[in-house]
Image (tube, rainbow, N blue to C red):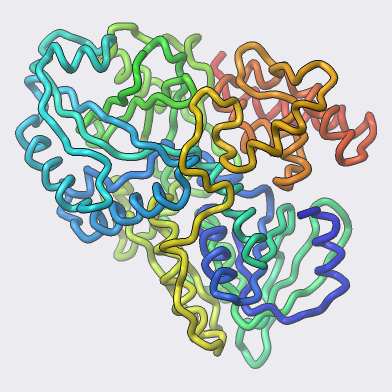
Length: 519
């Protein structure tokens, strides 16, 4: 899976692909795996790095969506619960059972959530993760000792799942290769090719070099998330926009703010949203906001009012009130919500996915969420195969074990999240002259993971490694800056880069990471 070899193959071999998929986030990667696993010739192109945008900036939950049940969208909840169970089964090394506490204060709607969560349990059926139960005040505080005790009447415990989003994206990329497909990052689609007014391929530019070339396909699939309208308007400049982008912000705190293994779910915040405080990699992720924005960007930034909102709500429900200096990282992601009919209330827009086929044959898949990526992909390839004039082939992804599949992993294993690849990382680590120490005392990562990311996960920049192959940027932005140079040097040895490249990488990463902490 060497990128340079892939680029050479693309430029030297003018084959016709069954599908070219634009976009290397959850939807694009899932769609590519769906197509390749059915035996179709599949190519995925990503303009930056895999999961650069929304797909690495989630709340890290694989969930049915309790609030969608409150909205009456039972079909979405059913689909999401089923997909949650399938993903737990197909990627057990990354998707874990997570208990949630809904604390019952006298101003909250405890009775509704008690009944609603029992319905949630029933809808999950055989793929459920555990029953919900009522807790006394004492039991609730046993689970979360730092929960504000004043006016607390008790709580409800229920179960959803947690994952590492960008690690799952990497495993999907590896699964794509395992299934005979190809994916390449830093390959930007700059235009669409047409024959007889029908889309027949793409124009691409290699952002690492000077290569510009054209690729042919029987069908082109637009899976670019927040940038969906950009690709649709390459096809038809007059195409109306369908995306209503909304920004969601999270703050990351030290685990001492909420010790224990349970997460908090606040059913209703001041803006009517659900708020989560979730343990993740020995930190606490608090989020999220829902702020309509005008234009999507690859590197969205949190607004001061969003940060204040999260700090205020965290202080309201935790005995230890977080201050701005306590925030280890703050990150923003853009939800690619699909809205029609002038609905501008992003909090109320459905999270269902939308599949469109334009008169030119361009296939667009938009909306949805990480939990339902596989079903979105299945629906997309079902329709795209018809557009492409290909033989219909049944989906196999319900039971497809993703790369790294390992049923039982040791929580204490430093390479636990790599699943079956952990043995290969341990081999790299054993050859390190200094015994493979941690890169930073406040981060769990080692040199072996940097080397592995370059050799086996197509990492090309320091940002790729520190933001997505490891989660250093989100766990502690300041600490990640301190290891940018040693990471760059490790990568330079693998990629055969010079001192100038190292300096450029450190500078670029430092500028980016400075936007992830306060002050």
